[in-house]
Image (tube, rainbow, N blue to C red; front, top):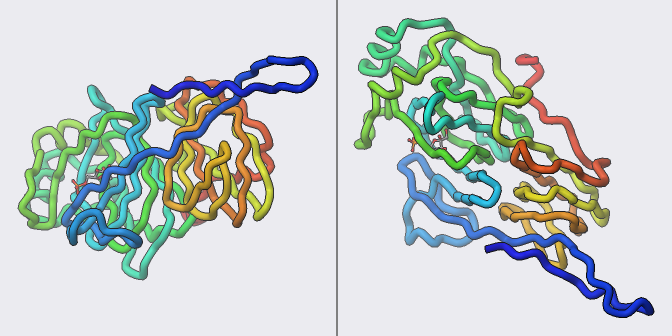
Length: 287
Ligand SMILES: O=P(O)(O)OC[C@H]1O[C@](O)(CO)[C@@H](O)[C@@H]1O
């Protein structure tokens, strides 16, 4: 269990105790995937392709994943009903071959989607996007989608992790055609960054200048460190880490730092010092 820290303020007034926040470095779980890549720094997998570095944070009802791809993921759907799973992606890194398939180009009957899943033409029926570093995308439950190769993406979702595969490029993994067809949205939709009020979480991106400080006072949040390094709650942080944060706490960037702050929608979302917060972006051609 996570416990609050109490600090002795001391001084002339004697034993006055007040509550400060705390930050806790979360433990990553490495998941091998046929579309993964080797971890860049250490290799806890013993040579397997790592596709996902997963942080599950039940205290906040969130799951955060770093996805690293060398091949396309399955063409898939997440449930809209029980076990609903909306996803939000932040593009961290792209290689030349990178793309994202997101939603249908044209409205399509379920029988046509099934036929395309069976004959392998489904990817050609999807809206293909060239992702740009720093852009973000919201994948509404039920949207047919697949991440392409050459990508590092920070993914945020709730605790549900249900995926139904429609097509898997001939790989030897289970498909879930019936469930996927039942859950799939058959209409087209616009590319979304973060629709108001729909997701169970909110996102704020902070770009903290070198040698500056911000105070995080969200009472329950995750901090995903996209780049940079510094000190949070008197502990060193570095890129690619994920922290649980129970504010208030100060964060000092020792290098230019980019942080994605994820909060459950029902949390108290008072944050101090938002000077470094940036708007979430997407390619202008989808504006
Ligand atoms: O079935 P695949 O191809 O392994 O993909 C599953 C992964 O895709 C994602 O839904 C991303 O779209 C991840 O959350 C999930 O772990």
